[in-house]
Each structure stands twice: as structure tokens, then as C-alpha cells.
Figure 1 (cartoon, rainbow, N blue to C red):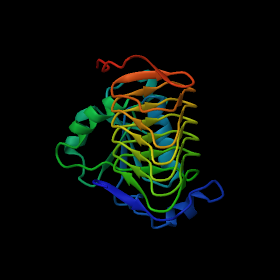
Figure 2 (figure 1 turned 45 degrees about the vertical axis):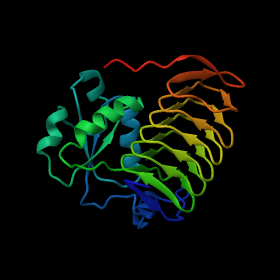
Figure 3 (figure 1 turned 90 degrees about the vertical axis):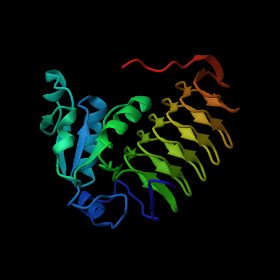
Figure 4 (figure 1 turned 30 degrees about the vertical axis):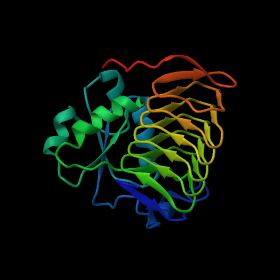
Length: 244
């Protein structure tokens, strides 16, 4: 997969200490010479910082607009505005602490314009099976499961307790929210969102920028740029781009 790295058949789980996880020579874990910063200060960004800390990464802090009510709750220092990366050491990698995949795509274009690379995170409490790949910038929350031969694109966020089964492909900037299920041989398009508790059954394609509503069960292909809800899932409306 272009821009991704293969994750060998290692198991990351709660029975391992942070120190034990840090010693595993997995290629998705940057070395101590590659410190990380989080772009954003929201609750989503705070969770990412926590995952990085639990996984033994060196986190420098957060960057972005200074919103006092958010910055004071962030567990690491506020480093500066968005342009902080422009003059940072080339070894610094970035994580995007934003839940909206289309916004992550825009931020990524800006953050990577000078050749800077994103980091990636796998929680010590996530499980990754054989021959899975994880794109730059992608993050697995605690309890997330990739079974085997799963391909994850760039800046994909896979939430707490979400699972992706064999031979599935998750496109760049997609978001899998807590407790959702993507069954085997399915495809989730670029920027799509699978909401909390939703299920995508086997051999289904979810189109680019589509949204599968919370608790929905998808039994047929979903077109691009729509919102589907219900059991079985049906189109409710178009999914218009967010305004930022």
C-alpha cells in the first residue's frame, strides 16, 4: 500500500506493559529520534496524546490556535500556532487531532507541504493481526482490532472497540467510530465515516465521504457523499462538505 507500513504479526494488548510494547521492533512505531506533535487541542486530540503516551512515544506538545479552555486541559505544552511546524526540526512528525476526515485531509496538505512526514499510533490495548498495513498518520484506539490482511490508508482514525476483518480496505482519512464493525472484504472510501455501533457486512463498498449513521446495518453498497441510517441502512440525505 502506497505510503503505508506493514505491521508484522505482533499483538498489542492490555496484558503488556508500556515498556514491553515499546521494545517491540514494529515498523509503525517511530524511534525515539522522531518526536511527535499533535495538531489540535480538542478532546479528540487529548485522546491521541494519551494513546501516544501509553505507547511510549516522545510527545512534544500540541500546536494550533490557542483556545485557553482547550489548551489548559491538554496534557502537554502548547507549542504555537499552525506555522510552528514550518521551522521545527525535520525529525518531528505530526498527528492530526481532528475527528472530521475531510478536515484532516486539508490539514495534512498544509502540514506535509515541506516534505514533513506524519507519525502513526497503535494503542498498546489494540490488536493487529498478520499482514496488516497502516498508513502514515493513522491511529488505532484502545480495543481496536484489525484481524488479518487489512489495509489502512493515511490518517485513518479507528476508535475504541472498532473492528476491521480480513481483506478489508479503509481509505485515506476515513473515520471508524467506537464499537463499529467492518466485515471481511469490504471497502470504506476516502473520507467516509462509520459511526458508533454501526455494522458493514461482508463484501460491501462504502463510497467516498459517505456517512453510516450510529447503529446502522449496511447490507448493500453505499454511494459517495450520502448519509445512510437504519436497519437495514437506507439513504437519508446527501452529505454536504463541512464549512471551515
